[in-house]
Amino acid sequence: MGNRAVYCLKEDGKETYFYAHYGANSLSPLLRLWQAMEIQKQLPENQSLAHIFEHLDYEGGYQEERLPDGDMFFAGIEPGEVGAYEGAYAKGKQLEMWITLDVEENQCILEYNPNCPWYHTMGSYSIDLDKGVENVKRLLEYGEKHGITEFNELLAVYHNSTGLAEKLEDARASMRLSEYLESPQAEEQRRRYREMLEREEPESGQEEMER
Image (cartoon, rainbow, N blue to C red; front, side, top):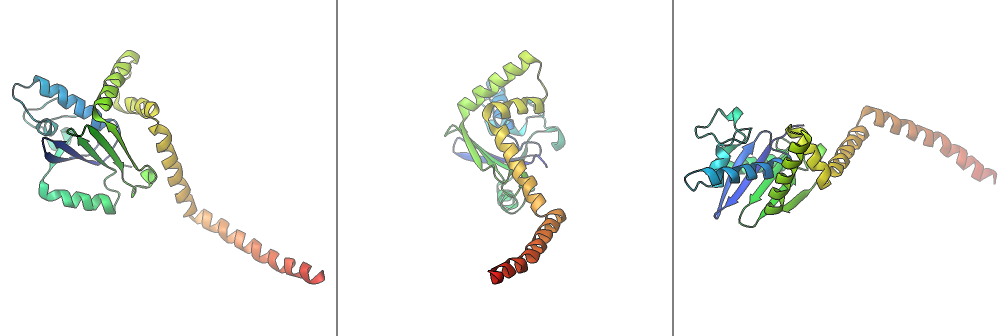
């Protein structure tokens, strides 16, 4: 499994797209948006959220001079390249999620790629941005209070509190079942079952004739 996602930020009538190599989860979109909003308040110029996204590092800090792409959370996607990402998302499992942050409509939309076996049954979810950001602030306060600072641990708490943990486990259970049904072991069991039925059928026919 990977964590690759495309983010679409809708702001001031514009759509800006980003690739995030470790961004395919339910917490990163709201966390990164909150970090960008906090940075926006501190910058002397009225910088757009899209501009700040391009300068966010993995710690949520603002890098005026971008670090190498491997050290930045987002990489910008040129308008002419969006179609290629859409095609990759629609036809394969290289991209796990497609995330939309619509500032104007106050919506965060999480789409799990059904081409990924581990997300096949997940579908999509939406949350009001203001409520989502408030939830992130509460989560960070909870983490600080209980000494939880590692991202994956915070993500686990977030999944449990939102009910996504159960849905993710159901999706993984569905994947494991599908993998088993397609396995040589399952095929062998089906073969044995067919042979058993074939052996029983003549006996049943003989019983009918004796009656």
